[in-house]
Every structure is written in structure tokens, then in C-alpha cells.
Amino acid sequence: MVNILITALLRGGMYSLMAVGLSLVYGVMNVANFAHGEQYMLGTYFGYFCFMGLGLNPFLCFILALGGGFFIGALTEVVIFSPLRKRSGRNWLMNTFLLTLGLSMILKSGTKLLFGNSYRGITSYFKGTVSLAGFSASKDRVIAFVIAVVVIAVVMVFLNKSKFGRAIRAVSMDATGAQLVGIKLKRIYIVTFGLSCGFAALAGAALLSLTPAYPSNGTQVLYASWVVLILVGLGNVGGSIVGGILVGLLETICIQYLGAAWQDVFALSVVILILLVKPNGLFGKGVKSSVE
Amino acid sequence: MLRLENISAAYGYLQVVWDVSLEVKKGEAVSILGLNGAGKTTVLKVIAGIKEPKGGKVYFDGEDITGVSTDKLAAKGLAFIPEERNLFNAMTVYENLVMGGYTKDKVTVNRNLEYVHSLFPRLKERDKQLVGTMSGGERQMVAIARGLMSNPQLVMLDEPSMGLSPQNTLVVFDALQKLREEGTTILIVEQNVNTTLQFVDRAYIMDQGRIVLSGDSEALRKDDSIQKMYLGMG
Ligand SMILES: Nc1ncnc2c1ncn2[C@@H]1O[C@H](COP(=O)(O)OP(=O)(O)O)[C@@H](O)[C@H]1O
Ligand SMILES: [Mg+2]
Image 1 (cartoon, each protein chain N blue to C red):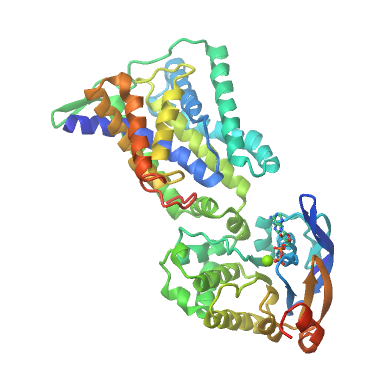
Image 2 (tube, helix red, strand yellow; image 1 turned 90 degrees about the vertical axis):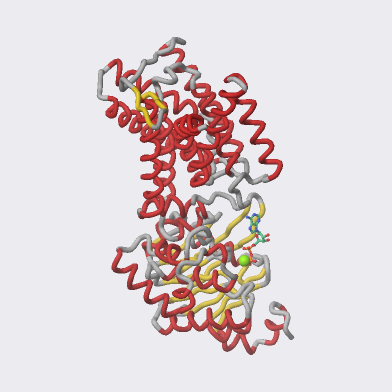
């Protein structure tokens, strides 16, 4: 039982990080991002080439993945969303869905073109295991979990305590109100999408020894992240943390008792059941985009 | 201080504002009155850069601000308090007010906080309450206070008394009166005609997208035809 909980926690930490990014983008920019998995995928390549290609220190690899992801995200906002925002009216959310779906295919195919279909993995960043109360896990897993916890904590403090973070939350609650007090939406959007992509890339890099780099490795992660969001309610950043752990738990239980092949079926069935009872998600209040 | 020249505005193909010109001088309190759908809100949104005009110019302090984006206005000294309030519902009263001073430094923000608390003591008591859980009157106070946090020279209000109890309407107009005495310029849109005409120096009457009449409030108040035609209180 303790084993299951610890495995779930380790598995869920990164889902939380992915979901926090996805949720932030939905809450602040009203973008349904279906390229989030490919931003994770790019992170796995960042991690691989930094670690194997350049032989850098693992932590430096993670930081580079975070920075690279941030840059790609910021670029996506400037090149893709910003022009769309000027022309898209009522169908904005649907348009972002279609656009990011297209972006996801382009990134997937582009990577395939560039690097081929082969798996590029590593056995581990850090050799050895950590044992605790009779349970042992690879160091990589534990470190990935710690990174997720630290990054999420920093993000929460940033959103709630810093001036820029408060501005991001303000935009998620009322974009017009935010402009009226002098907040420049453009900057907020660039940073928000940058952070979200940065977190996804960081997750990809940190989990490289579990999931090798290959073009379509983001698909399952994308589903898991959306499952978290739908589970806790769209745009609820705080809830996404709990949701990530919950999905990790669901998957772990499923793998333990039903077999790995059933994990998506199991997770999605639970989501359907929960939505039947609580249509706005576990923590949903029916209020749109509140970053709490 | 504020001058509109031949503003016209449309939603898609539907034009709703024609050729509106008006002026608000420094220190004045001016109102735009008119029935529902006359185009008053649209005019304010054009001034605030929320709605792009089809034609015409907006000058603020002699500077052409037509089409300048909304986020630049707070720093220029223009505050718009919209009908929808546009508050940050999941934030506390305190946080909303601090956000109002986004373009100001910490010292100024603290000074302004004290000022708006003196204007609306109730907001100080409700410091930690989430704005989303407040009553209409309290939300209007937060909206006005948030607008004042940026030291505006001109305050534009869209129907501040809408949905408010008589007591709260009084609180709001008392606060506006204080602002006025301190020299803040005010442009107010209202349907609450009699209260407003007692408060402002001058008013413009809008009907179906055009300004059909303007003058001193004194004269307008005595004008029978207006009371009958536009304000439905013969
Ligand atoms: N977003 C919008 N889209 C289409 N028509 C609008 C929109 N906002 C206002 N209108 C129309 O413009 C006209 C003027 O509206 P408005 O400026 O809100 O008037 P007022 O504030 O005087 O009641 C009305 O006929 C209204 O239906
Ligand atoms: Mg109106």
C-alpha cells in the first residue's frame, strides 16, 4: 500500500507540473493547448542532446530544457497566437484547439524528419536508488519528483506574491479590467505561454530515463495532462497539483491490479464517472478561469 | 482636458454612434444622458480604447489618443470605471486596490490606499473579502476605488448607480462630490437623470447614437420637453 502511494506520488509529480502549465495557459490566455505533449517531447530531445551530446551536468540539462522550452513557447505566442488574436472573434477557443493540433503535428513530423523515428534514451542521469522505509526508487525518479515540487512551489509563490504574478492572475480573471489598470496583455501572454512550455520541456528532460526521446512520446502525456485538467476543473491551477497526483494514483493502481494496457481506459472511466456527478470537475465552481 | 471630434462607431455593419463631438474642461463634471441603447457606453469605450472608432478623434490633454491601447491610459491619468466593473473576482478587496496602482510605485500605492479608504471606509473593513462575494454596491465602491488608485486626472464612470440601493447610490455620489471638490474632472454616464443633473455642471443628451441636446444642468433641469421626451418623467 505504501509502495503504491509512493509510486503514485513520484509518477504524479510530473503530471502536476504538466497540468499546471496547461491550466495556466487555459486560464490566462483561454487557449486549449493540444501541442503541450510535443513541448514535453522537445524537452526529451533537449535533455538527450545536452546530456549525451554535450555531456553536461544533468541539472544544467534541465535548466537548458526549461529555458529552451520557454523560448519556444514565447516564440509560439508571438508568431502564432498574437496574429490569430487580432483576427479571431467568437471562435477563439476552437481556433486555438485547431491551431495547436496543427502545431502538434508539425512538431511531431518535423522531429521525425530531423532525427528519424529512433529512440534516444539514457539509462539514468544519476546512478543508484534511494530507499526509504523499505521502499526503493531510482534516483532519477526521486529527483524528477523533487524538481516538480520545487518548480510548482516557486510558481505558486510567483503567482501570488510577485507583482508580475499577480498581474497574470488578474488577466485570468478579467482581461479588460487588467488593461484598465495598466497591465500589458502582450507581455503577460508571452511569459505565460513561455512558462507553460518551459515546464513541459523540463518535465520531458527530467523523465528522459523513463521515457526516451522519440517523435510521438508526447501523446500519452498530453492525454494525462488533459485528464488532470478535466478532472479538477479547467483553469484551476491549484487543483491541478492535486489532480496530477490523483491521476498518478489511478494509473499506479491500474498497473498494479489490471495491467498497464488498461491505464488509459481506467483513468478515463474514472473521469467520466466524476464528471457525471460534478460536471465542472472536482474543484470546479462553474466560474471561468480563476487561477487560485 | 478631453475632446471628442466627430466620433462614429459601429459593431460590424451596424453603426450605433454618429458624429459625436463633446468636450470636458479641466475641473468640470459632465454627464452623458440618454435612454438605454443610445450609444453612451460605446462612446466611453471608444475613449478608453476598448472599442475602435469608425471615424473621428479623441484628444486627452491636447494629445491625440484615438486608438491608443487601453493599458496605456492609466499612466496618462485617465480612469474608466465600466458598467461591468471588470473586477478581479478571485482576489481580495486589498489585492484589487493594489492592482489599481499597477503603474505606480509602492509609496504612492500606500498613500492612495489610505485615500480611497477614507473615501469608502467600508472597503477597509472588508480588506480580506473576495470581491466575487460582495454585493453590487460594495463592488461598485471597489471599482471606483480601484480606478482612483492610479491618481487619475479624469474619471469616467458608466452608470455607477445601476443596481444600487438608494443608500449606496448616495455613498457613491458623496464620494464623487468629494473628488470633484478636490479638482478631479469627471465624465459620468447615467440613466438616473435627476440625481445626475443635480450633480454635474453640464450634460449632453444622446438619442439613437447622436447628441441631440447639450447645456448647463440648470437649464436642462428646467427644460420640460427633455423631461418628457427623454427622461419619461413629465
Ligand atoms: N458588443 C456589441 N455588439 C453589437 N451591438 C452592440 C454591442 N454593444 C452595444 N451594441 C448596440 O449598440 C447600441 C448602443 O449601445 P450602448 O452603447 O451600450 O448604449 P447605452 O450605453 O447608451 O445603453 C445598442 O443598440 C446596442 O444594442
Ligand atoms: Mg450603457
